[in-house]
Amino acid sequence: MVILFLLTIAAASYLIGSISSAILVGRIISGDDIRSHGSGNAGATNALRTYGKMAALYVTLGDCLKAAVCCVGAILFAKFTPLGVENTKLAIYAAGIGVALGHNFPIYFNFKGGKGILVSITALFFADWRIALAVTIISIAIMAIWKIVSLGSVLGAALFIVFAFIFKLDDTAYVVFTTLLALLAIYRHRANIVRLVKGTESKLTDKK
Image 1 (tube, rainbow, N blue to C red):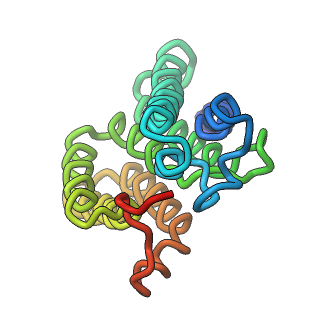
Image 2: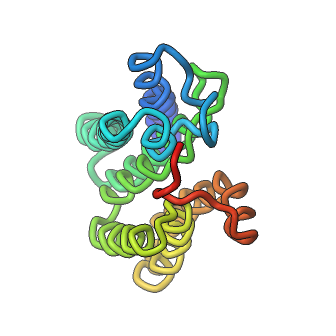
């Protein structure tokens, strides 16, 4: 029964996650598809380079909001169904995985979406805000110093795995949840990693 409820949460979160803020903002602003510009990624960084700061802000808010809606919905679902409050953490984990998969592989947009950093970090804040805050600060510092968003994103994802094993090793469900989200994010950045190694990755200071 618990597994069925968790799968229901994951499926609902996947559908919500499939609502791509970047694609919708691009269509509203210029009537085109953000995936035909720049890196081809449906995310805030490409929105910044393609449409400007306000568009990137809308995309950021939209991505964080849909992840928060999924996590809050999961908490309420656990509270008011037989799943029970004792399984609230598992409900959040199911929502986090679902919304990240929806964002990365949106059913409404031919399964070609973003890289899931903002939705993942939002879900991870619901899972454990202390670790999420520490990793976010470190990632932002890396981005600010080197002006490369993907570098901060990839290293941040790796740090989540490291911190999970250091501070939450006794919480198997959290470790598995964090590791899955982090590995998914790293996988989605595989092309960026190649460019980072070659020294050809774009910086925030680069023009469109």
